Image 1 (cartoon, each protein chain N blue to C red):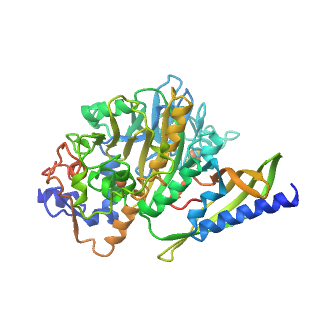
Image 2 (image 1 turned 60 degrees about the horizontal axis):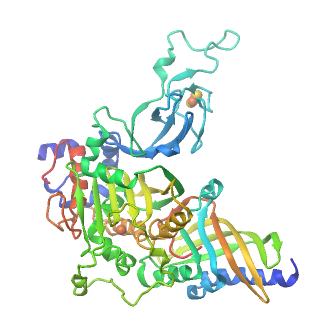
Image 3 (image 1 turned 180 degrees about the horizontal axis):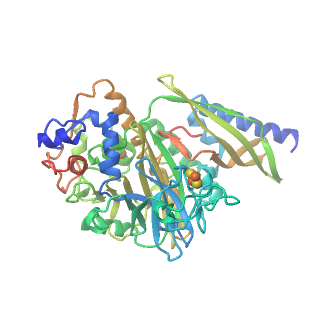
Length: 419
Length: 156
Ligand code: FES
Ligand SMILES: [Fe+2]
């Protein structure tokens, strides 16, 4: 084990467990470079966009895997293709627009052009001008296609991978996680809007925060006040075998009392606080299973959220060691009637950069980042609910945070840690 | 637009900014009609016709709830805004309803002293004039950028 840690070249861990996290993983430049190679370009599936954002042949959209710019196209055969958004000539960004429709992709710099499958089809002045200049005979266009990545689709979500070794998407997700994605995205979606939240912290702090069901009812008091997410609700955590993917869910259970809360010294449960306009919380049980909250993550960078009828996708994009972008896509479904659209627009106030129950998540990663400044040699502890990363039938746990580190260390160190 | 209407509107704009920038948020919802629309969106969403807003409220009650959540429930570091705006431009004038546009810039100063240009954009307003009062029936805040730094606590 020690040898592996040493040869991984990354930050050294105090042990082979995942319950003690060295702060350096959030600050170290070299670790960040290793992550790019072994996580983002490793055998992972990275969320890129929605299938619905590529509605017809010729549609393209840009996205990112780690910091690498990616373009995704739908070709004439209706197939999805993904490549690095980088011209094979001198490396210029190829697609400058966020999304659009095109018959081919042409670089603005020297007009090399590519078909929708990423093959180089045209080189300006390949034969020279007036028989002068031009490419030598040994130049073969087929040697200069765009750098292609694997692309796969699941329940309308499009993922990309640099690696030939990534398992098929369902095995990657694990059957329980796959089922819960299907549960939410069970019919054709409609996009309600986008925004991007700039997080002044390392990307992992946000992913951990999303997997951290321990904080949910403590940091976010709006949530607890209206009984959307109490630790004594029925619910639990599912962690897939790899550790990287998780679901946290809760169901309203009026038969359970809220007594556990009273004795805790936490700033919570302001019973005197009532909404002037309670229609904000007029949810409907659109899935017919009583689940009011389902937060799901797919390693390394996808969050799928269902909070009552507020459905959203969050793509976590690292932009530096200590900066991250969180790209929000708010969703409804094509069969929504006007009342349902209005309900979703209202409930969208719950999450997002201005979310009543989530705005703190945009700041708390930065609180950690600032807190650890100068003492990166120390560690944090994630031992709520044990030291391993199995599924648990309660939410006062950090099991899925440990799951994150299980998957992370497996990829970085090439060996599954003690979790 | 007659002089009285212009005065009422300019007054409304000034009150709006002052109530936000001077931490008088409890009186901010009073500048809206009971049924109203307040939404903070961005250029991209607006151009695509996407209705989502990072903040989206269709009643004065929802605006009040936003304020009480900020006071009672939400955690965010102490911060203040400074709004800079230009003169309103008249779009349509129709009985009691005036639609106007104006530009804004918001600088956010954190308790640490850090100063950021937080948002720039356009206010698209439908203003109801009744006697000698003017109230927002609709205020769509269209930010130029789709990016929001850290969080959007105080309304724009
Ligand atoms: S860099 Fe793209 S054609 Fe030269
Ligand atoms: Fe949170």
